[in-house]
Length: 203
Image (cartoon, rainbow, N blue to C red; front, side, top):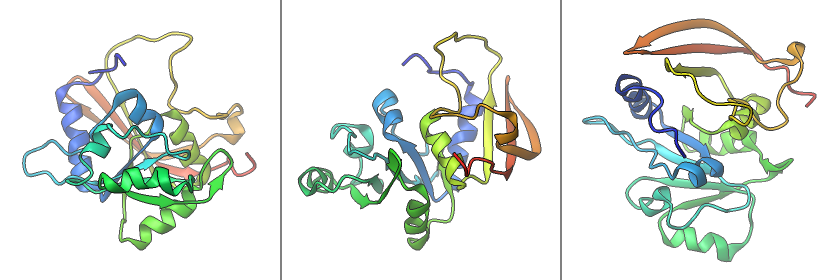
């Protein structure tokens, strides 16, 4: 709740250019609960991406910014919850509800990608937290990773890490990245890498 703002204006503007460029943006319900983001593109002439909330148990608050503006910007709640009454509340507020099978404790992201691809969504910017990041990497749906680094030091033993879930404890099971590019954005640094191979299948 105290993360605004880590990066500077130039880096944040670059994120909004990405939001303009991609068909959709995806976050987990944890990000919605913690930050209440709008997930819109805030550059002049920018296009808002379709918004996807991964919410296995349908916990997104009905007064969340993404729900409140669902009639203006297409918002899909991807869930495993089959409770029609709970779904109806989101439908009435303009959200679409996409019911998916579970894979472990979360929605099956591979099935989710198939469904979204069938709707013509050809690129998703995943801005989720560590739990969704890990699930996406584990599912093998990530092609590229972006890391913004600000010239600031803070945190501690309880600080969040980029990869959550059960994590990756051994080097030989890591996600390999390749073809790195480094871009200076004001005082911040953007490192972009392609995913070379995923070694998490046995997890």
